[in-house]
Image (cartoon, rainbow, N blue to C red; front, side):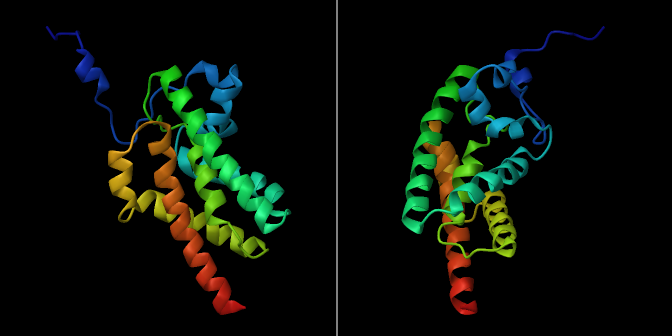
Length: 176
């Protein structure tokens, strides 16, 4: 007879591709909805990629402003993301829930600072941000493993965004 008892430690072990259950509060609590990337983090696979895709329309709305205003909006997105993700992580009792993809919004906004206008740059920014967010080259991986809470959730994506930003600026200066 098999022992059907599963210890708490066993239940906490997860497959790499398994995403913790999406809390119902995503659909009833506005902060949870925002933290889960306006619902994009509830998609059962590749929530970070879908979160970044959902960030594109928000970027396009913000991109019409001056560079200084866009920079201010990006700073507000980053700071608000830190606070929102910190609170929602505590609310759902999961540190850095994979479905919480507001950090992708913040990172993508950083990538697209001063990006030239055009769909090609949006696609390039999307690809660069996702590559650096997934690959996590030094020091991104270090901070991802060692910083926790809302700041830790957002900071590694901001760094990935900075890597993408640098490449976009370099390429746009060569093309101009």
